[in-house]
Image (cartoon, rainbow, N blue to C red; front, side):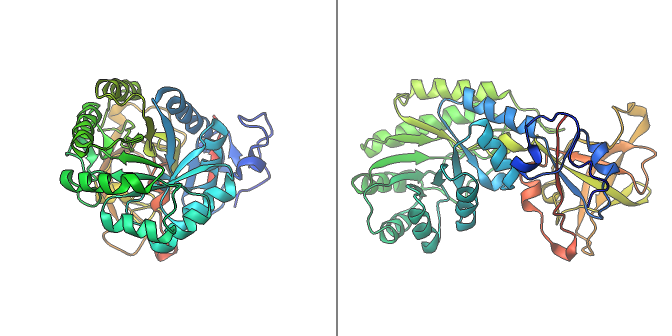
Amino acid sequence: MFTQSSARVAQPVLLPDFDRAFGLPAFHTVADAVAQYDGDNAIHVLYPRTISDAAKTFLTGFPGRVLYAVKANPHPAILRILAAAGVRHFDIASIHEIDLVRSLIPDAELYLMHPVKSRQTIRHAYAQGVRHLAFDCWQELAKIRQETDSASDLTLHLRLAVPAGHAAMPLAGKFGAGFDEAIDCLRAARPLCQRLGVSFHVGSQCMDVEDYRRTLAYVRKLVDQAGVPIDSIDCGGGFPVAYPDMTPPPLKAYFDTIKTALAHEGFSDLEILGEPGRALCAEGGSTLARVELRKGQDLYLNDGSYGSLYDAANFAWKFPIKRVGDHDPNPSDVQEYRFFGPTCDSSDVMEGPFALPLDIKAGDWIEIGHLGAYGQALATNFNGFQSDTTVAILS
């Protein structure tokens, strides 16, 4: 897939024995990777230093336990890098994710926070030592009880439906118990488990720190009305990263707001959880795509909506982008383009617009950033265009 033997860099690298420990060919720059690549598909890129730094930001700043949301990017190298940085708790949703994390990080603590699970998943999770499970209705609670033989060593987390906030991708409508139902569920679950908590999710890419404050106030009201003690609060995900048309507050503002709100609402003594996914891996990954054809301001790429650009196609999501080998171009030397993916599907289009040099041409490679979260995870093999090539860039 790569020419010569230089996928293993000769000079000292960021992480000792990188290729052996993390399972990826490593290069100093994306230009090096492209120059030595003789494959035909797009190239997925991971930046281990960026991922590790993001993990340390959460581990030192978030006022509670950090659970990596595996769905954001389940690549084994991502999981190993996060584990090396100190992440030991993982939010999983399926048998495959359970087995994947267990095989790579045997001592990890797993949290099955998906509110609706198959019976087989519950049984498998319990057999694999999972004791944290979420539910959002009495039917799911009954299912958990049945499939764990009414185990008394569980920590149950009630997923709440919370008021809409300022997330770029709201998550309300599919999961979560409403106010009255949540009260009934808390009262029913309290005598059935070792520990009881509530969980919520303010939505993906939350742009307003006050959403967490308002939601914790809502939790306070609900718990008081239920009249039962809880042991933990899971603040979910939603922690954002900066995109070209979205500039959120710094993460510290989110951490400080959550900590202040917990104290104000009398929750400081509880165990606090958070489930960052995007914020841990988005900026630590990108896709290198080759221009196959240019038609005016339309660029046909070897990656698209069935690859890592799902969000760009379906939600008009913008990503940082540049031609490989270019430094920051003069604004007068760029124009806006539309992208088409490589499949035969005419809906495989990313309207953008995406700013690239005026002279971009077939054969050029472009780097599309912030695809470490969800971009790489959502890629399919439709039409045979899936890329299995992932490299590490150690710069």
